[in-house]
Length: 320
Image (tube, rainbow, N blue to C red; front, side, top):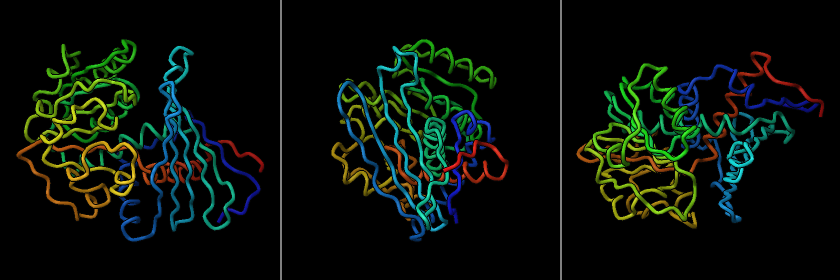
């Protein structure tokens, strides 16, 4: 129990230096999902506001029986690219669940990047081909890089294909892949990138004015798609090509003002998948994990980071 006196501050740089692997976070998320299924972790649906100008503001809240409350606020601000600032920024508060006192403040950028890829990893452990060699990325920003790191730890990857707009991000992703000794190329079209790929990651900017340009019919049987961008770039009429679609949380999706896809296409959510109550994966067709991000993911990653920092003495203690 935290009774006050000070709180811990962990910047994104400090968080990145904790040595937490994508697999560590995926394991923590799986444990949190089981805790949720057993009634030991409680999370509210994600809240989101679109105030205009392409901005997207979101927040999450979760509390666990292990003594933590985690609240996250993140904003997507496309105009930051012209300001030479990250387009995604935010902060996380970690509080004591018994006293309500502030225990830690964390930068949100590192947590958001790694927990999103870890959520995909949890789904991919059950939906993707263990022998996957080729991954296609549509969108080349932070999420593409974090997913590359996560999937490189999980699969015998040999090559990546890229479709993106920003040359700096494309170059950075190509460089990261080649440093891993993977073949890396920019595809001439999205169709070229997706056809024959074992794994697909789509992470375009969350902008509903974007005209869809991806067709699930291009994917081979057995392929797995991690869709982090609310299905915005996918033709809605093509999503029926997926044999199995898992979302992060059924309740959150049912209550959303803008569903990612028709609710009847959803085979289950991440809790059901990990608990073993979702229907078996249909390997004759591609599968997808389409998700908005859930409070549980932020909770698992933030609590793991705070515990690791307290064990290793990382971070700045600030009097409260």
